[in-house]
Image 1 (cartoon, rainbow, N blue to C red):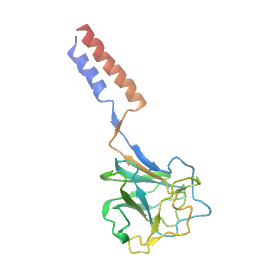
Image 2 (cartoon, helix red, strand yellow):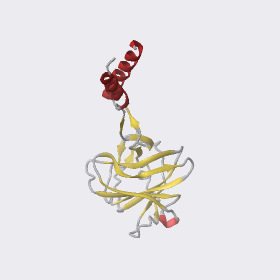
Image 3 (cartoon, rainbow, N blue to C red):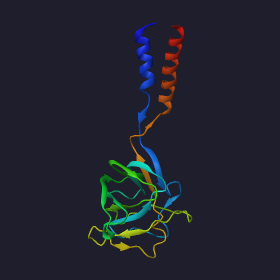
Image 4 (cartoon, rainbow, N blue to C red):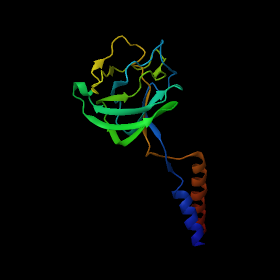
Length: 198
């Protein structure tokens, strides 16, 4: 049995899994995207209170943007509440918005089941397409900013806006791609056959 053949097969078996972005939790993400009845964000900074339904780790929070929404956006994640109510900044990331779900990457953060977090988006004045048009979508309490950076204005009378569409992403979760699965099968199969011949 050739040592180089064993080494090659082992490499095929071991290195076909690749790290890619994996959605580990979401809010209204599977619903139809829209912006409600003539709704457009009229504040540059807006955020939502979110309670984690289970424990997960994410290093990216993606918002849903429409094809007219292009700008540099900063996202901030606070513990418990917006900063105006005592929330502590946990993570922050800046990114350039694009069509569909997009967000910035930050150091991994564990969202604990039952705990509340405030997810803020800065720089989204006149954005639309960020909410679900599904009437049964989850409603998240919304706060906007008066310019203080504290998200100090609770939203009242804005029924479409709290149906924010969010995806919590972990970019370090190894997930096999279809082509990788084929290579994995070939590599592992070769190893098994060589062991049997020995």
